[in-house]
Image 1 (cartoon, rainbow, N blue to C red):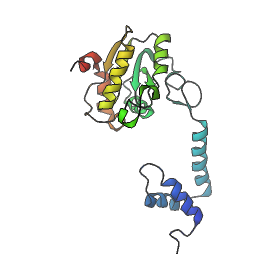
Image 2 (cartoon, rainbow, N blue to C red):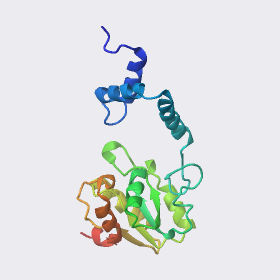
Image 3 (tube, helix red, strand yellow):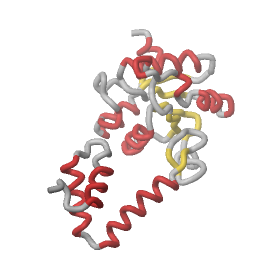
Image 4 (cartoon, helix red, strand yellow):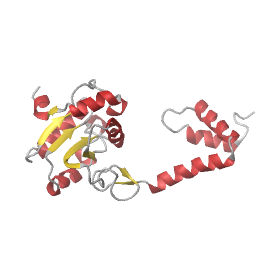
Length: 206
């Protein structure tokens, strides 16, 4: 007897179980739940996923997600365009925005330098960052990268690359534990870290 009574069900379970943190049992539970719901609800879910995959674009300035053209942050004229927060991923932008403590703009690197994983500076969105510096009057760079060896290496690399600019360099306060990712930090701690950021040179000199 087959493990699944339907090949269609088996295919759906296989596809769902490819998602991070979703095993075959959880995927099966999702599928059985969807089968019990009105057909329109399952179709709405599938339609939303399809539209997301086909429609989401990336901001040409900061590499954050957008529905086309500039993202909501870059197109917001009330944001402080002189303060630029450098983050590893889009999830970090979302985490910082949820604190409501930051009103500057962002630059998403798309990763951090990691020789062990074969990630070099050329694999990151660094060239566009350097171009932004040439065309924008940035007064402060906030290094909001992970408190890891790779994050510190990336911060130092960017500091050397951008060090000729007259802007100041700060890093979020280390209320965040060493080795922690920003997306898993609670909003209060992350918000205070943004507000209480310290000069990057001070951290670098330790």
